[in-house]
Length: 378
Image (cartoon, rainbow, N blue to C red; front, side, top):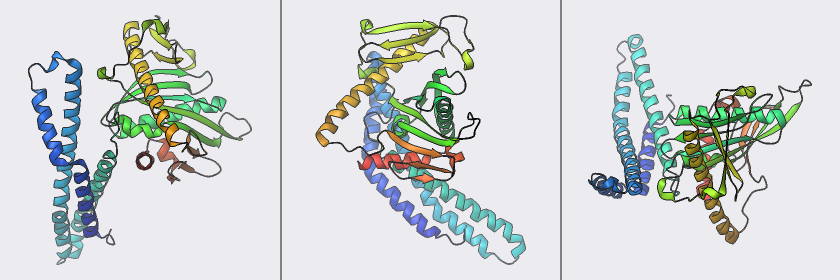
């Protein structure tokens, strides 16, 4: 701690925050916030629910960003004062043995605060890169087991847990909509909704195939196996997206909800599966109590997937004009190696770590930050 250049770190934080403030254009954000507040207070706001939803959502995001910047500016301004007070305590050496504990406490508190401010500014800096049309929205994440048999099903469940732990770390709300369990172990697929500020923009960089290399716990000869899990991330649709679904183009099947190993968890046919016939997209929901609720939730998921398909088609047209820029790894974005060595490496950004257990326990911040910056550079 004594070797750290705290004054240099404070100066760097001041410059970074000034740059973020310039990019965000704080005066324009405050002007926009005032305009949105005026619209939100209009007595006829909810005469048009779609417009009202857009106004209130944008107002919430704008005010949240303004508050974050102002709070961080205040904390950065306080850092030199905190450092001076901590240094002053260390200079009071009339009774070194008595002051040692207080000095350590003061410098320790300051170190924790500057590390906290640094992390918060870094997070805000990454958020400024999330300027996509749907980045601010909630996210729908679907995880599927791919090649690898029972190991792949087990790996898909591990990936699901990894994302759920990440959401827990970041206080993101999660609602599991549907889980299809594999017969021996793990899951065939699961879909859950993640709600929080910029959930889609943040988690969208995790879309792709995740590859696991390990000694299989299901192999009696303890051989090394490679298995794959696919991650799909789409934005949650809003009423203003106008994704029309013709009832004639869907098939609705109802069935009984089930748990691990085929265990029945519901005595009525309340679970719903919807197939969109033109695209072949299939969605399911079994977490609600009634068939009507499950159908409504499944339709919302289908709308999100159709919205993403429309966006992919639009991006494909642009990519066709730009030319093929995909890497040799294709859709495989990350490898998790547990044997013969420990490493998690992202093939797009080259970001890697040897702490595989932390990653599997939801510590994805470094990978997500590197992914967002990589995407922005493309």
